[in-house]
Length: 78
Image (tube, rainbow, N blue to C red; front, side):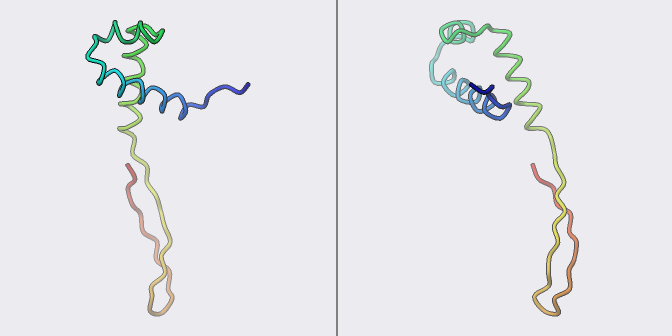
């Protein structure tokens, strides 16, 4: 069986956070109930927050509708 990818783990933890918010339990109660420790909760919370802060730049090539000349444009992806 293959190991889960980082994005699969991130999706799993995002679902855990959603379930936690709906549970009305404390962090310790909820994560103990699904077999994780409180420090693991905070580690994943930090990891996901850091990944949301990353910015990527994307360069695209466009073609003008008139004349067919290309133009390079840089944009920011969040």
